[in-house]
Length: 104
Image 1 (cartoon, rainbow, N blue to C red):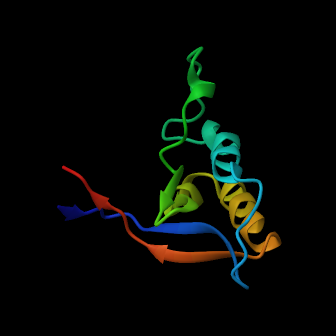
Image 2: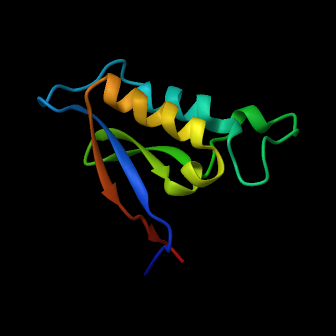
């Protein structure tokens, strides 16, 4: 496995005081809203609304819902980056800096 060259932030579905964030599908909802922000701009494909942006992906880490946000989102769409990070701050969610491993 080789580490990617891009950095990510994990927004975890746990508040800073340790409570699980609700609703349980918050990560999918947030990533769904961000689905239009992708390399090359918004897709005009009829099925585009059914996929997540590679810059904002829901996942689960050790049973905790998370959204992995790539710093590429900040570079290409600063307002979208601010929206996601403000969501985390406004809901007192834990955010950690990390890097996913490439599974090639």
